[in-house]
Length: 612
Image (cartoon, rainbow, N blue to C red; front, side, top):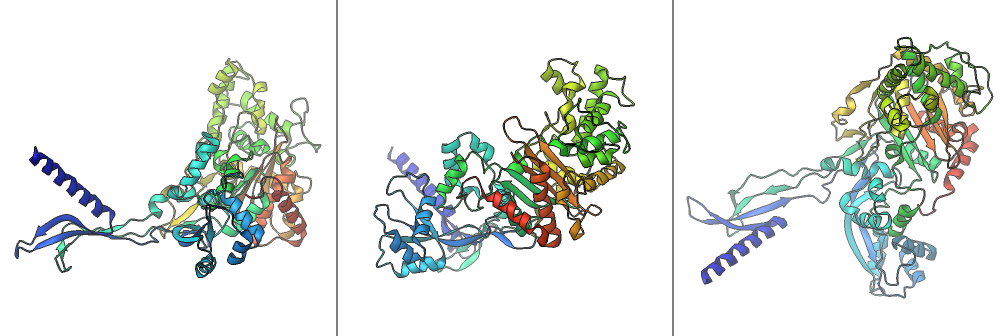
């Protein structure tokens, strides 16, 4: 019995020694190895080769550092009041308002009990002041910590966060919104590229004698590997500018280079500071983000799929041209008995004018010809013909990357939706549905749902006359370029000549008499091709949409804008898009549009909470 007890005691001791060695940077393994020649016994050691900055950095397309691992300082306030905020402000160089606001931001809810633990981030200078005057402030404690540091407040949904540093946010989110949290969760490129960013520790395995001298190794050494840097496609200056235009409004803006699929700006509004979700003194701001009715944490461009409105007329026109339902010279009457047209305009004598005036009856009849009267259909307007023609439409529309994820390098992406004949058979509870029951497809309403990424990619396809690279946010991992799948060219089922037929109408949209003529950039020599959309909304004001590219002949930038409850696409979404185009292509905004720009920015600052 005694022997068995001693045996188990020795086994437990050996196990504890091994565990201790694995968790220590330089430990003996608890084992020894005799030298076969001299008989001397050597201790086995396991040494961790590490670097405190092992995780890679995140940089923008111009190599400005956006995220890095840096040392910062935390000031722990005493748990027991009272605290002289005026004196504390004088110590730190803050005014009393700043002190109270910083403490309020750190509390998870406004009526937190007295003595709730609060930590405030300090600069190195502020921390030095506290330590220098520690004799007068013995209740204050300053600690140091290495954590991911954001050099910009912009691009929060893109940059994301390190999961290990967001545990407090996770706990808050589960408490405040329970299931909704899992739909909001988005770790950005920090999560998606975690395996490349985090690097790898190295381990040495020397045999050491009693005097600390090394005599070979007892196991194979592994090499330390620094985390790799990510070079984003984002232009941080353009990103910050676009965020000012949307601010606290609900919506999104996606700008990309159609030649490469690189995303230049990615805005999900209302916007919030990138560091908020991991900063130890932002619990109160996080609570407001989680509770706010506008859902700022929803990654709208990737996760929110909505009816696109009239911008989808571009897809319907391209498919109708490909399948022979219309030609560029096809004319249709603006017949208000079919569907209403929101403004008066000259007759739609051809496709270019139909797009210029965004005539709803014109595109009602385009889709009617596609569904009911295709030249190669089985018969004119029969059940079989309608099913076959809608299936053809759906197949060609899906080749735009719709009704599926595009594969952007973010943790989560919604696929959107395009209806099929089988969907309508089930939804209508009959196979004998008619075009009159699905005509909303002709103007981008009804069951069609697209994400912001899909809207921007749709415009990129037209800019490229039929092909695209999948939109992505990382242009290079170190110096190796993007992930291989982002170099794969995708082609639609539409011939390039039919996309070329759309461009004159898109250019006319921003010319005199077009739906977005007020947003023209012709005064600075930039020809913009675009399409406005006003999305009907039964629960409030209509949503505003716009897609476009510039310059029209050799596109360098595509922009898609969607603003919820903002009204007409021409007056709300188009101006934001063309300002971003001008900023990117010229670097500044012409004086003619400065007043316009300021008015949009003021409107963007209204609404939502001021602490976001």
